[in-house]
Length: 137
Figure 1 (tube, one colour):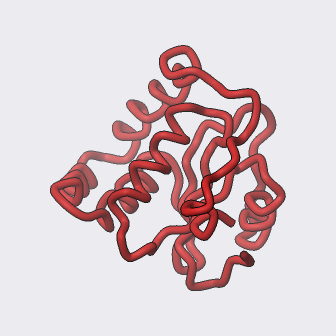
Figure 2 (spheres, helix red, strand yellow):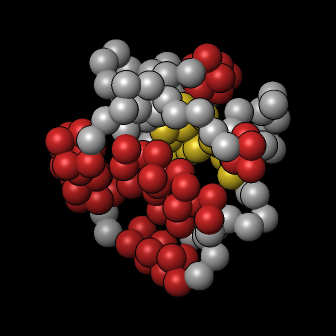
């Protein structure tokens, strides 16, 4: 599937267990299939970022990235913009947007820095089930 400018694309660390779990969490609460997904390490992920004038930083990617309506959101802002679109009470997490971004991102970076130690890492991006394949780019 080729992304279009109207897609809301979530780019994530494809080898991070926390990140993979987050993608499944989003899919389960996004019945309208608003979001599409790609691993930051994939060719599609690199192409999506290049299309908006960005590149993946060297080393382990430490941020979730949301490309929505041609704009790029990273770290806590991306996470909050994602949850505000989810079904259920998760939308209320959007209220954390009132917390200054440097403080939100400080907490985000703490988790990102320790995510492999706390949640583990896989050797490679996992193969999606047929039901999830339509949501992945």
